[in-house]
Length: 313
Image (cartoon, rainbow, N blue to C red; front, side, top):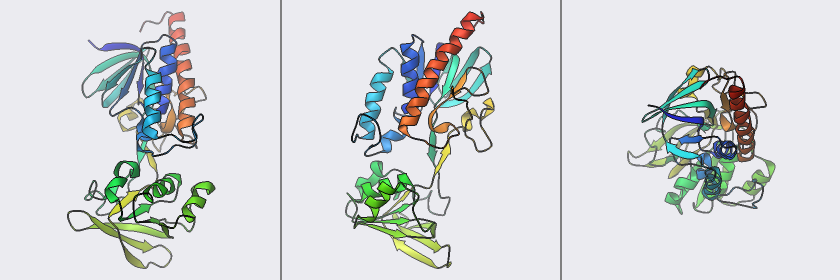
């Protein structure tokens, strides 16, 4: 028999944990479900400087504090890779690789994942010099030269982090200026270890069959091709929604993001979406937490409405 809950929160990032906190505090039975460790992308962030209450905090430390808060009112946490969600009206069936669960409501907090370059060598040298997480892998490149691909906040922040370890950090960006916030740009330009290659695209990750040795780069203005030597390549070129397993619900737009209203409701009653997986402009820890609080409250109201109308779950 399937395990039953009032609400299942899929994804234990900051939004999911906030939602679990609000829902469990309202005396709902809550399952917080994730295929990995709680915290989401916070676990890949060295220093968080824009979360209220902290001048600076390590991502994993903030994740642990949030988890403790999320489970203090009885929310359960379980590992599971969601295979699908079936909408049966007042009941939602959530199937993972190991269990089947039932709930009156579901909160989708599946987040996003790093976009890949899709060039030769990227997959081959994954874990052997190609990385999407400077905090996770930066220590392997102490006193060595590394490359960062991208020009947004994540690319430059992680590049700055790498300057504490690497001997040189070369940022390769396809445009002639960065997209990162000005305060982050100023820090980068003032750092002697950071170098910039503009108007250029990485076309291949090079290696010696064992490890990365550099990248092949083409200038998109002159078509000039060059090779830049490096021991590591850190890629930050955007994000994609993690919605493949829930596509059958019909709540995603043409780009795969989930559309909601201000109450975090999708077009399927009883299915809510929060955090980075939503179709929105700003994806931050603070906005995910706000989404989670709203969803937790709205889930309570939704379940109350089922009870008021006598709908059996």
